[in-house]
View 1: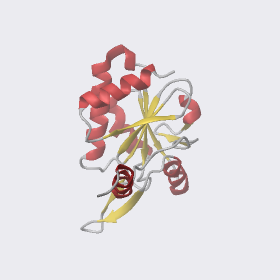
View 2 (view 1 turned 180 degrees about the vertical axis):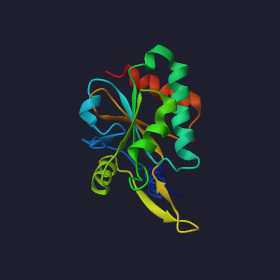
View 3 (view 1 turned 60 degrees about the vertical axis):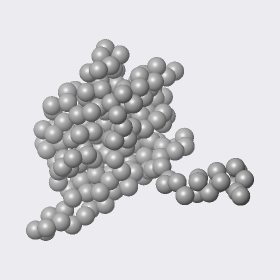
View 4 (view 1 turned 30 degrees about the vertical axis):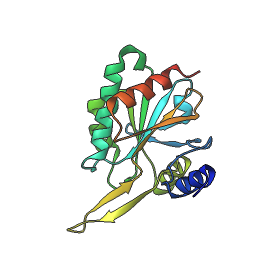
Length: 183
């Protein structure tokens, strides 16, 4: 019979690795907004913020995640007014500033769309330990596979927690409230 320590080690080894952990998640980034100005972590300093990597042609995960964040903000009320969301496209080839602006406009001014060159996008993704790749589909089209987590960053720009798109609204609200209350 396995000891508790050996059993715990086996379970830990078999568990899927989280896409994020550790203090270096979300180091500096700088990309271009839907209005054409440079924007990065320094622009968010002093308040907690969320970072989500996605793309405007996403059929389910991206629009659902943005809607859920917006709904959680509404449920929290005035306490969520200082939260900002940086939506970083993983499809800079198609996601023009105009397209990003139209995509995020229903969510209000707290949501900023960011895009960059392929190298800038890769650097931002690497800073958050996000993976993404182009996946060919029918008719010479493509979609994007990408890490579908929302990164919660504290007011000092440090990784605080993450939201999984499959989490309940109650769990999302609880984590956002904890982020808002963090020193």
